[in-house]
Image 1: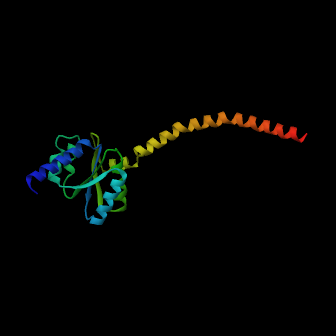
Image 2: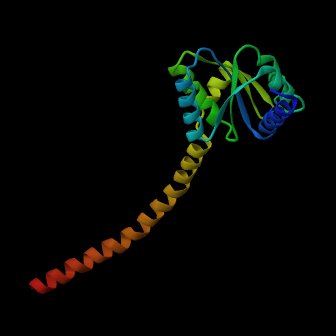
Image 3: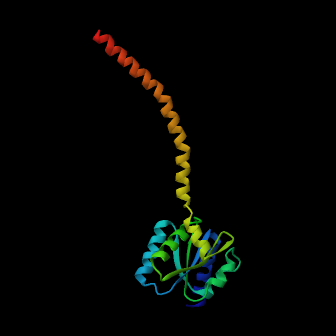
Length: 172
């Protein structure tokens, strides 16, 4: 890899570290190409990305970003999972690491806070942003549904009383 390619790679990684809200540092020891592709697909489907990194280049890219304290975690084979959503990458990485012991969670960073592997695991247990939005919409729409039901009930009861009266008058 020549100097220009390295500079481009550092620039791309610096962009990732500058824009991502969550970075999960993993150690993919012994992952096959098929397993790595499967993990990348799961990450992409969830809205996150997974990338194998070169430690020296990654440390250069971390300089000057909020994730700079993570540079100590980059030794040996490493890869990063990252996302704009503060939970997605952690959820997918932790779930995959639970299914496949070849992927280890080393640590990571959420915004400007550094997390260890246990912190990433706890973060993965939280509901995602979409799940929270769904719950919020459900909470907001439930009272409106109940109000509509209550408002319709008296009218329905009045209609049934009138219908019974008509039936009774016809029978008489």
